[in-house]
Image (tube, rainbow, N blue to C red; front, side):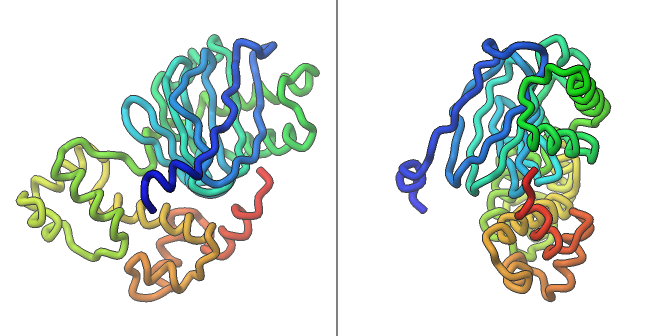
Length: 270
């Protein structure tokens, strides 16, 4: 799709003014259509962003943060960020007053959404709790804060590269997820030795090229499941020789077979 066509379809989402929020917590619940976007902005508060299905992509000064459904994106106070949603999502966010963010990471990144946090968000969403006031709700909000403080930060599920040759390789992989080229073949394509390319991967991505490719394929699979594609089509589009090989990879990453993942996440209300 051409850039100007994509831009014409985009819809701006409302940005919360945290200075108008009373108390120390704010829980937001929204439904955003496909091609929704939030332009670059920042808040005085920190916040965790969560989409119940589909991958969530946000831009921060350090680069792009891309996370699958089981993760949220943590944005510390004052960090400029923007977001584009390719698919319609049910969006949830937890805003925390600046003093509550001191024990949380000071850089943006991914956080895995644990069952306790998800259960409290579901409960608050069903009851329409946005600014907890009752003592019991404040205790639950404190539990969410405690859980987030104890959750390790991952800068991005699918990290970006800086070295031009590695950027070229990763861009080519994303353009053709079914490409089977080996590390040695990718290295040759950018006039680099296999060892040098492997070293750049570990230094810049924190993982091997093979692991990065598997994560990329997993995220592609999530979007394809969201679009209603069959498991067989997804498997072949991503370069797997058999659907069973794809299913095994997907289950390793998500803990669920693709069809069960589709049912649980695509139809989820959280």
